[in-house]
Amino acid sequence: MKKDDKNMIFRQLPSVDYLLESSVIRGFLLTTPRALVLRAIHYVLDELRQKINRVQREDELPDLALPAVVDQINKQITILSQPSLKQVINATGVIVHTNLGRSLLAKKVITPFNTVAGCYSNLEYDLKTGKRGSRYVHVEDILIELTGAESAIVVNNNAAAVLIALDTIAKDKEVIISRGQLVEIGGSFRIPEVMRKSGARMFEIGTTNKTTIDDYEAAIVSNTALLLKVHTSNFQTVGFTEEVPLNALVALGKKYNLPVMEDLGSGCFIDFSLYGLTKEPTVQDSVAKGADIITFSGDKMLGGPQCGIILGKEKIISAIKENQLARALRVDKLTLFALQETLSLYRDEKKAIQQIPTLRMICQSYQSVCRRAKKLLNMIGRVDNTNISLRLCDGFSRVGGGAMPLEEIRSRLLCISPGRLSAPYIVNLLHSYNPPIIARLEKDQVLLDIRTIQEKEVKIVAEAIKLLSATNAIS
Image (cartoon, rainbow, N blue to C red; front, side):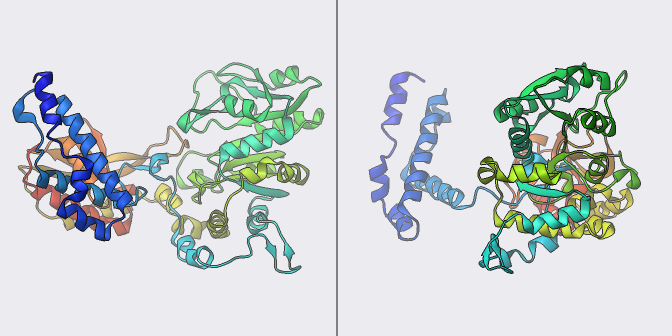
């Protein structure tokens, strides 16, 4: 289309004032805040302008009649009225899915939330003395009990835990770290960048694949403040490799009176090798081997709320608590409550695996997943094979969250093969369902991993697939 023709079409767009004066929009304003209505109007008009700009032929033009525009505004008001953060169903097979909120909280944690969320609490009030107390006491004692550490503090995530620990111990001093442990975690957050922000100066030793205890010792100078070990949880180096075990690093630290810090990343309290999975270093192991400071996430494999947990020697933890960054990085009452309740489940490992969703999904047997997959298929029943066809197949789930990168957990998948509906179209329809269902798209197949679909969500998924089968749209 010619530019002049498009200019004429642009002039046909109703103005904001004209729309506000229309009877239907005036009706919206009786029950909907004016700011929300205006936002919807501007959004729809902007969308229409973009569509007009893109059209090549007259038959591609959007409908600019007032009823059609008002209908779009009404739909946009509905969309904008809904919360942006909402429940989704994770059918990807990635258990600790960073983009989908990481770990699910246990029912025992969620149920009593109103007690703390809707009431005043003793967050920083000592009920024995009647004076101001510390918010950290609500989780410190149980962390000490579970791990054997001398002291503990909780901040808002593990990157913050590493940051404040380095700022406290090694600001303007050198920290020795192996080149093979200069990891990057999600969102392009890198250990070297976190170290720079803390004011510590990084001193790299060894090579990407091999670092020895002699490398550490040779790098120690008068300005060395810390020996740092970072667990490479989101990748593995295989082949001709060597890294220094924590107990050897601790012995070296004692020889030179230097603290040793271990960043465990995901962190876990369970020895997963007892359940047929790859052995991950546990927090208790790091404490027992003598690390002076240990940092790890409270969500991810621990299965609690997002936070960063710092354990270690009393003297160092006390210094971290006095750091001015502690206030900027502290967690709120709801995070502390969720962490407190999650940790209490770890007093009984069997109960923790049964009740903490992340642990339950990681340790759930293949046979159990198969039973749930068969239940889902039975609930769906017969489908219109012209649209889609269904079958169950074997596949693999992953832990996610930067943990056990090579671990493949055998699982059962619902495989949706496209017919009249294309695979991308099926994925988009699942995304638009309420609640949205997030699946995998592989080789023109839509895969729903049953391991990460919760028992209470099976019926919802079944209804979504039945609706998908019955759709009249042709993609």
